[in-house]
Image 1 (cartoon, helix red, strand yellow):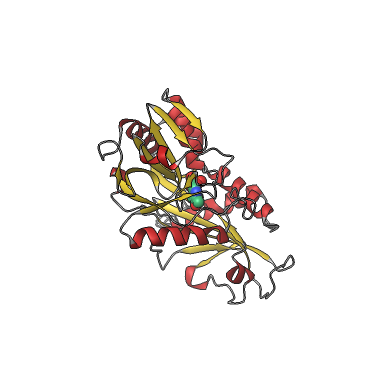
Image 2 (cartoon, helix red, strand yellow; image 1 turned 90 degrees about the vertical axis):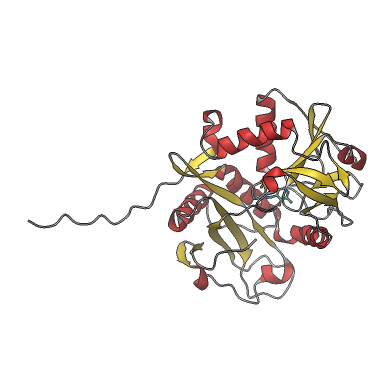
Length: 318
Ligand code: PMP
């Protein structure tokens, strides 16, 4: 993902130029990976800009921060407002919004509870995480790197350090020519992608790894389950084996940055006829209509972003 080199960043209460948004090289988070963050999308709609499921993302950020004993010095409402004002100041759609909570040091010592906890928020132009053609199907590799067990790193927290495993898996998959990796958990059940949850279709039923597994409880995952049920599909959350994965009729990733990305091939096994399947297409269709404000049923998932007041030219004096 390339990030724009301009734009405004909200940092501890003030909007500053990206070039001015700096942290110390001795920041605790930089050395130990102890930080938490969110990935959120802004979309254009006929009624103006919106942020998808903003409050749910802020709630998850606060849970992640609690797991890692990082008291965020702002309330839920203040963080919601800060994200809206960052999005409004950058005024770019579709956008990817990245709030990050970190200890900005200087502190050299792992068990740190005293260094200041900071919040920064960036909003940059969004691309597709899995490539501009990912809506039409991607190739994924089952990774040799396993997802860390929640006994070690609680998977419900979206923590910076959790992504070391995703980095190993994702870079291995891309060096082998795949668009994404699928990580198994420590028992060999299907967990998730590097930045997405995963869904399978078998015999007309939609399956996704159970929330009891070592997965991040994705907000897109939750949206997909609701949309699929409303479409009349049966949705089953359970532990899924590699055999079930490789012989699925359809599969797709679901995540904020990846959106809904059909998987056409997994580790050289072609799924179905190698094209996005009908259930995937139905869900994708409702999802994209929803985020673009064309599906009134899920309108309460869209948080409006008021445009920033443009300076009004004074009426000419007579
Ligand atoms: N799993 C992981 C590891 C992720 O990083 C993400 C992206 N946040 C997801 C799943 C999907 O979560 P969401 O739909 O909330 O973006």
